[in-house]
Length: 108
Length: 218
Image (cartoon, rainbow over all chains, first blue to last red; front, side, top):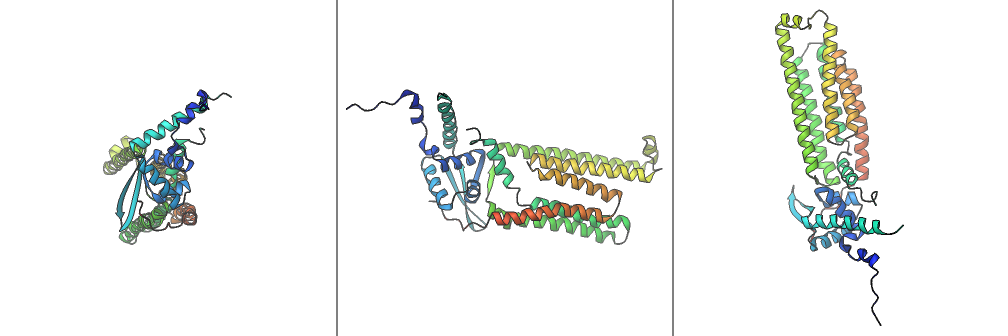
């Protein structure tokens, strides 16, 4: 039995970065892409995510090297600022271009 | 697709969210209300130092409410954010433009002092003191034209649409201060700015409750 071959017209979809493609992470990356950095509270307010959900997605992006976490203390309270790394910015930009390209290339 | 990922709009909304706590409005209204103390001084010359002291105290209190409100009430609810280089450039441009306006005001102030000290020059330039009402009207218009456009510029560079309303009310307030010399106009103007600010502040507190203490992200 031969393995099914990928339709060349759909090959573009296979190249999409799955890490960025997940809606919650995409939302998070879009917000971080347009600013310099923000803390958890600001990102929760902007994206409507819960603390746990945000934290889980942050960890995945951090593991991939897309996000850097800067921890400090402000008025004796822990303060975590999050920022996209240059690699994360490049990944988001590449994702945008790829999505635009594959969707534009689809026949009407 | 373009609607779903309008990055400029996402940035704009994130930036504008930082102004939705009403504290700017309360501060600007407080400044206008403080100016009403000065309006009394044109009606009566009693206790000028006390009135000026009260004016400065009003300014200080307004700033204290703004600073304390941001630091202890709204920032912990809204969270912290640092915007990108485009916003930093706009901030720098605003500082330069406002510095230019202040310089123009200083030149105008010294020019006025010079003309007061040299009436023959004032007469030569057509600013003779024959009609005090006309002079006061001129000063009132110039004062309003300085305050209104400066506040409108702050609104423009800070992407703060309510700032145009504040600019309009503030320029009317300055005009009233100089032309009518009656504190009631300033009190009305101050309240017209403060009341929407307080409403926004209450709305902000309802919309953004205090988040739980931050858990470490490991």
